[in-house]
Length: 200
Image 1 (cartoon, one colour):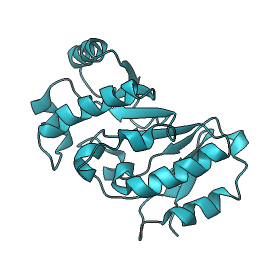
Image 2 (cartoon, one colour):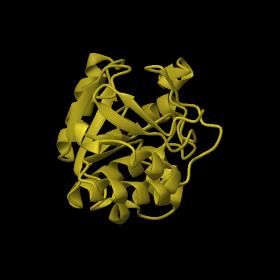
Image 3 (cartoon, one colour):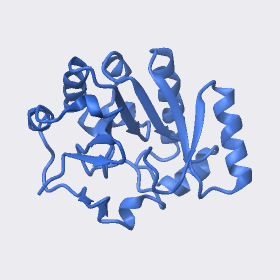
Image 4 (tube, one colour):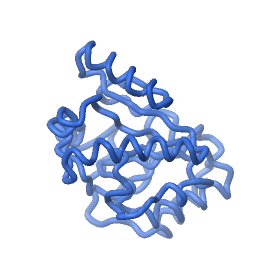
């Protein structure tokens, strides 16, 4: 069974794809076939209406957020993501996108205007302060370009009025964490340090 929507903690999550432009060395999908009892590997990617039909059965008011996040990068399905997000907003939900920030590279155009008004908050995986080290950790199909595109995406989201944060995982060394904090401060975006499997 394909889990297109699943609960984790108090929030509802939407799983659109297993495709990702990164192959991060620390990614939980390398070690876990299930998350909180939900198998997130998909045999097929859903159409927007399939997800919306499942959401119609949910009491969305009980979730503080609905989050686009699964075992892949949601912006590979940007058209479906936006259609679903628009539906969620019509029902009064607060909508968050968890992303590696490479959506503009993946889609070959600026996706931020499509996110504006449909996504309330975007959480972007920074992972490192240095492009070369980022590439070693994340192994993006875009190489070091992914790092710079991710930072530009973060700034564009903030400028579009979307609540924006960068995140790192607490597997980094203290010195690396401090430099990530400095980078985030330099571009005026909040940084959050997450535990290895914390999706908060």
